[in-house]
Image 1 (cartoon, rainbow, N blue to C red):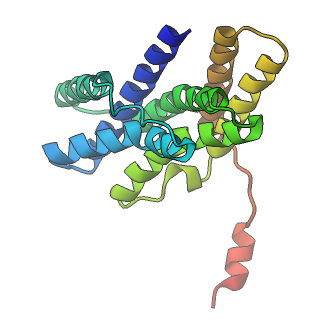
Image 2: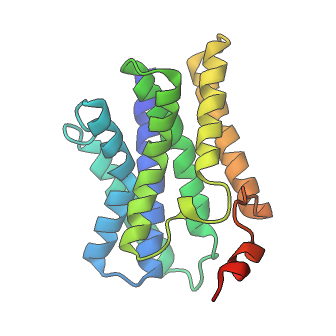
Length: 210
């Protein structure tokens, strides 16, 4: 299983690096900005998770994470430079894919280090959302996690599906794939149909205007 975990980690890193590169392209950053944004998006959430768990940060002793980032950045740059247009929701699609990998992997890593199921799900969610939050803040945008469509809720849902299947005795790999799929489908549905959890209505805002 460790072999699968490592490849899932690298896939998540690469997908988030793509989303960071697309964000840099959208904001017309230079080459250094592209590398920085892709890197913080790819490893920001996992770094914070590992610091909280008080374990070695994932990329400290493994250069393969940086290779994955570099390959993803170069491939994305080549694609962007050879296409006249990129669909407006491409960044969100890659972000959703990155969430699917990172949340479940982060949840499992927390479980491996003895946390409760609830804490594992929260740390898995943190693994998925924090890199994107840093990316959006550096781009001077409201982070996706705070925007309209379901975002963090989809991460929690994926973590619950994964840990629930494990509790039912389902093998780890099928449970992991099921959790990733559940998270991804809910996030894509939220994007397509603008699913939200409204708290304040437009009418409330109008009442508070001077």
